[in-house]
Length: 338
Image (tube, rainbow, N blue to C red):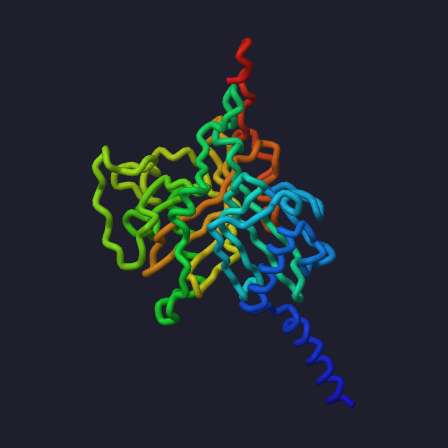
């Protein structure tokens, strides 16, 4: 009798853990079902948990609203990543809202074969830039180019096991990027020379076509370099005067060891007194031979009163300390706010 009780107790301890496991095949199926349900505008078509939680650019969205209504198609860029250890999967690419393309990152968590949460970062053609909008309602200092992303998408790859780094190593390399930005010192970043950075699809530095084994790029002549790039630029350059006090609320929810790719979330906190908006983002780090090769970012610039990222364990850098709050916009005469 005692032995039977021990066996029952042992099984009870093991079964919940087993039930909670979602391997790569399970995550692949869950993410596919979820995206197909989004395209059908039908939450019932996805295996959603009763308490499913859904945010879009840090705003809570009711079931059936937001992306459930607006997303109509998947574009040319469709990349999917899986992390059986964390039980999470994510999409990066182009999604359409009618005729309008967006650059989007979607993260889901799967527990007991149910999708318990979804975190959406959606970059649209018209959205607030780092300095909000100008008097004509146009974004100020805002990168967006789904067409460029289609020309330079993340490489689809399965890295041979002998060449893979561990989860811990991949996270450490990714975190070196945030540490280097915070310290305004690119030499702290574990990155290849010429590593590229694409913001909402637009190339802002480096060579997005470089691959493992590519030689370091020579500094291009000013007249021949692509638009938006600086001579000899990389994802680790030009940090000395970067308007940032801290990279806060860092998370690394999806580490795909097969693809050697890390999904990271964080918030750029500006220097005290700066009128520039914070930057909340999801960033994809493509890592090979122990260094960052490419960074793909989906980002938005939240207003001061929006709690970001609005996900545990960092429920939001909110309310902001007084010294980090933006001053109220100056009121101009007939021309409106400047």
